[in-house]
Amino acid sequence: MTTQEIANRLVTLCRKGEFDTAQKELFSKDAISIEPYETPDFAKETKGLAAIEAKGKKWEESVEATYGYTVSDPIVAGNSFACTLGMDIKMKGHDRMVMSELCVYNVKDGKIVSEEFFM
Image (cartoon, rainbow, N blue to C red):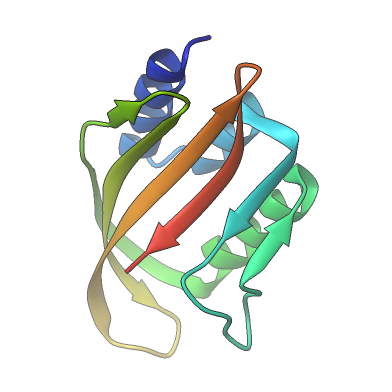
C-alpha cells in the first residue's frame, strides 16, 4: 500500500471508531507510539505493536462513554501523513470533555512505523 492508501484506510477505520483494527492491519510489529507527555497511566513512548494494542485497550477501559469521533482527511507528504482527531468522551471519574489532537504518522515498507500525537 502507498502512504496515501494507508492514510485513507486509517482515516476510514478511525471514523468508525475501529482503532484496534487500524493498528492490527496497518501498523508494523515494531511501531512506536509517542504521546504529548507522560502520565501516571500512559508512558510518553510505547514500543512494539503488542504494547501499542495494550495501550489502546487500557485507553478504552478508561473511557466511560463515547459521544462521537471526528477525523479530518489526511494530508500526505512523502512517507508521512497527518490528520486531526476529535473525541467527545467521558472518562471514568471525570466530566464529559472534547479532546482534539494532531496525529502524525510515518510509513515504511507499507506499514505505519510511528505515530505521534500533539494536543
